[in-house]
Image (cartoon, rainbow, N blue to C red; front, top):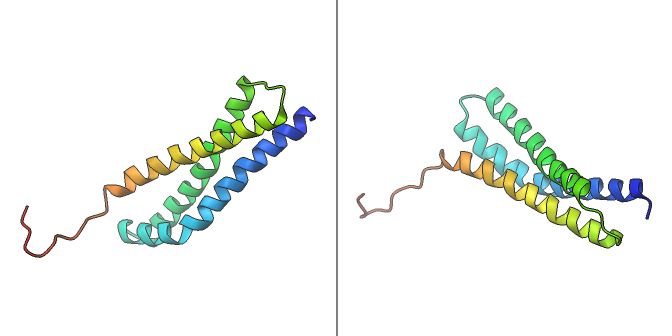
Length: 114
């Protein structure tokens, strides 16, 4: 397979995976940001920031892995690109979840005291 076509396929895999995750998370994330941010402009900024980061992290990891790995089989390269994209999404989502988790408060159960 042509090297450029393979690289394009790997990039498209990363972008497609990021878009799928963003599609699933966008509405709930915007609701959470609306609750924890002081105003709508701040929530909008953090939503855009999150979207950009969830596109960049997997793509960067795919490109770095592609630069350092050369397989004789295109399927191995695609498999590694999938793994790198998943790892990038995992890292990005973990970072976002860790940060947003600081603002989520669990209501106390009646009858329980801390």
